[in-house]
Length: 134
Image (cartoon, rainbow, N blue to C red; front, side, top):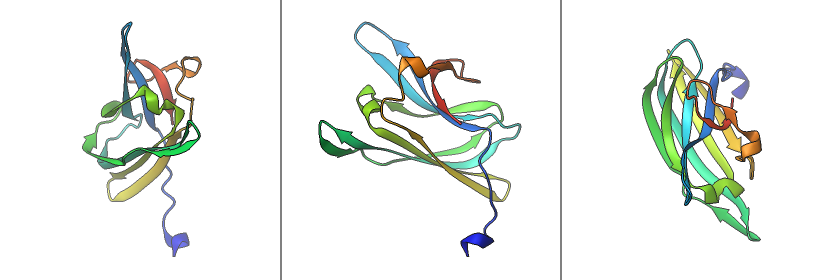
């Protein structure tokens, strides 16, 4: 049954955690979906959750669901703000979208402590500093 499904590999799609602004008191972070394709993606559904261990105890965040009707080619969309306190957890983003009648999906997981300045790049299309998984 599963072998009968087409292998729709996700390519040229990224999830990025970007530093939006910074002050003496705090930093503001946002998570973005980036479409690096030459065609739009439609009916985008993203679920996000955090999980892992903090101070010796298992921790889970709420599961959030986001719907984006269309992400144009070479464009980005804001998914959600993210709190620095969750950077010590696994931050999972499960993405599903359509191109025509074909459905694609992929899990993107930012591992604990991977959202740190030494991993920063200039995120394409967004042109902000942050960490990106493609």
